[in-house]
Length: 235
Image 1 (cartoon, rainbow, N blue to C red):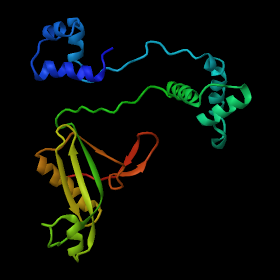
Image 2: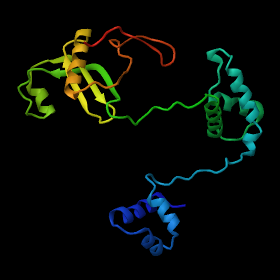
Image 3: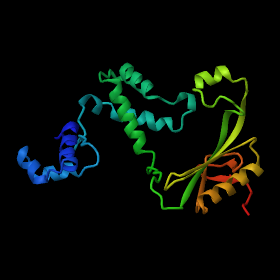
Image 4: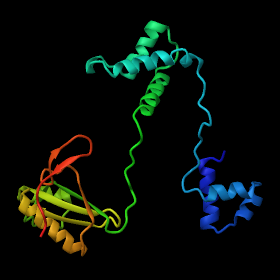
């Protein structure tokens, strides 16, 4: 299998130096199909096991591990087994001679398989479809006369005190364009005003806004992803 360095070299020849797939194949005695496969890959090739390695030592205790994990589902929280506790029991009660990392891997894979379908977070968005909003504390030196100096010199020269401000940030998910502004306090009036200014700055309103459990936007966190939103509207 091609190594990451070799893959990078082939892609550089093809993309940066303009060498054809035929030229690379002839130069390095490779098939054109193989060269074409690697130069079109956007990430280095990774080795993947076609079949899980068999471990005779683990085969003897797999059923024991599964029984422990299943019993933990109804056991009190303090009595549930970590991977380390399972390993210790295997050694003490079953004479297990395998490694702890092997047990950890098996437990991790088993629990992952029992956890239900995977949840995916979308990372690609249509223009104007979504924006992320955050509202947090920052500290600023208001009225500083030494902004031309490096921070280490400015701190020593400036007698002004740091002031705690609330920073409102809205980021468009598609373009990653950001609007930010500082407010003296975190209240609903300033929160709504910041939204209006952000929309004016972007020239439109995103179809969906995502908040990270902000108190001003979310009044109550419910089960799972459900939230009870604060009752407020924009004119």
